[in-house]
Image (cartoon, rainbow, N blue to C red; front, side):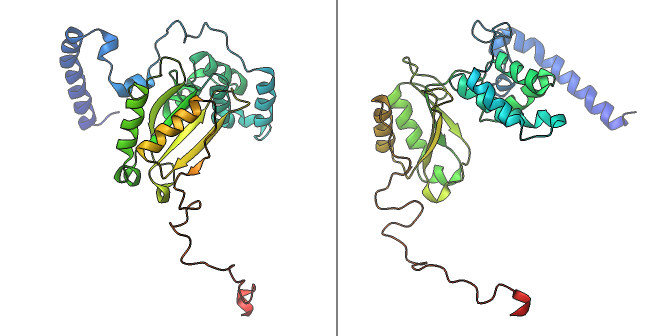
Length: 263
């Protein structure tokens, strides 16, 4: 039985919903009234994304899927849901249609809703089309302080798109990703390369970027070139300081005695 407080809260929530529903209906059509957050979780059938469209792994990827499943006990196939969704996304050009999710559900022998729950929770899974090169700008505090907003603005202006839109030629899209663990080389972007399917898929970090440098990277990709990943500051080596190390200038010394109790 629910407590009186819980029943009262439920009653108040129902009243609020009833009060809001007419105003939403008058303001705009049902689809337009959906908030951005719910749009990430809801699925509405469209000509290029509905469960009637056949989808299956390629022969090569089916072998990879079986290899992924071999890492888990046979009664825990559902544990492979994330790597299988990732593989499906790579094969499908960087995004997951509902029919691909259904195919994964069939392979791991779970209800499709169990796969939808995962695909709608993790931001690594794209549920709308992205470009062959999907550029993700880190938007967390260290990168933001170091100019990530200016970097995103430079990309959007150069490509003539808004965030999460795809360029008319299908080559590029720009999104935001939260912390990617490269704060020491902030600001940084990631480029997911779907231009050659799952066989040629790559996911590379480009660090210490500037608005000018990210535009140069885009143009190199447009020409079919592969810009070197990692720090884009020529005065740094990996995560080292500009000008070289000031500490740890020699090989680390081994401990005097590995048996600490005997020392």
